[in-house]
Length: 248
Image (cartoon, rainbow, N blue to C red; front, side):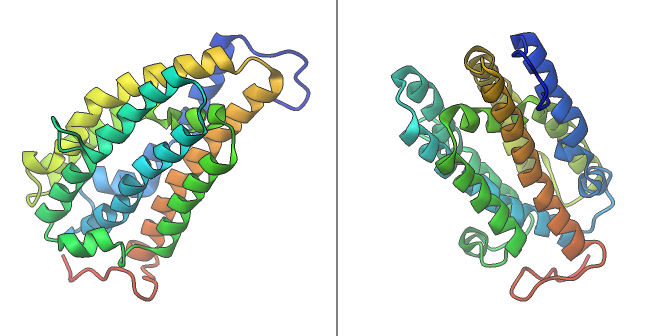
């Protein structure tokens, strides 16, 4: 979508533009992920990744709760609340946050320390807060569109499962449960969200907004990996107060 567009895209045309954003900007392309999935990180660097990613995981249900609070459509609220249960858990499932803490436990990180987020990089915290503020400040349609990074997540989860199990002897099947569950949940969630955006982004302005929303979300994810790379790979400048790995 450009400023010179004179008519809205078709739903298929809009979806193609959304998918192009993922092909060009999704964080699967980031050098840090390539190191992680290729077995090129040491234990401390993997710990730093898991600890920082927890901040994002813990922020997702708060972001979704903020979105629900702005949605007037009861049917959409009922559909979206399932995402909170996916992460926070319910009577039948422990939830994604609990599964992520199983990962950090297995990596040797103290659970209370992880949950406190005291060791997280400042840029990680800022990125997650920026995402929450985006949802607070923009339309529900843009909030839904920002979730469409899930379009591109399943191949990355599958690659991550294979890479972690193959390359790191300190990771076993029990520690990749979060990613295996997301292989089921993400396609379900994104199918609904994509259909919603296709059906509701009808004007040029709405379509520009949803494309920008997805670009913003890819920036949120990319910025977190930029911070990890800078602090724990090259040049290795860990900010004061952030997690300090003990060594390989």
